[in-house]
Image (cartoon, rainbow, N blue to C red; front, top):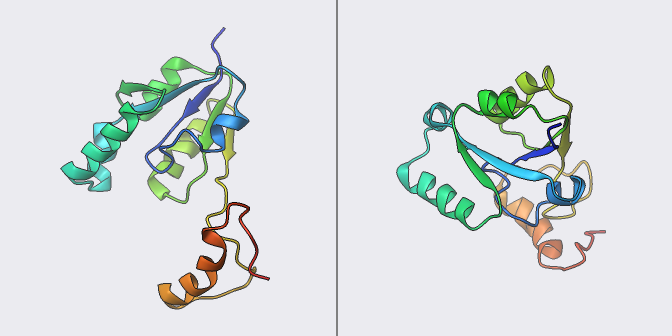
Length: 142
């Protein structure tokens, strides 16, 4: 029987991502090097090199091929994926939901900001966020 799988995408390239804690111990992590996907993103060669070099530092398998086909071929009983708002990645996730049970794992908050806060400019956001970003505990802006 196949084991659960972590599909790591380019928006969560770090071993400290909560997806590694959420998955059962010993779960295999993969990254699908999907040329068609990368072409649709418009990533530059520099960005692709950065992604590849980062992947080389992580304990994951890089598998070349279409992401959907790679994961379908591996046929995991459960799939753990770092949550994202990226519509291209979410399109793949939606397609995979029909094939395998998926657990989207949210990342830890970068900053703690009161709900309902609205910002028109980045600087307005940063004035609130910087109070908690550099605290080890995550802090609070209360």
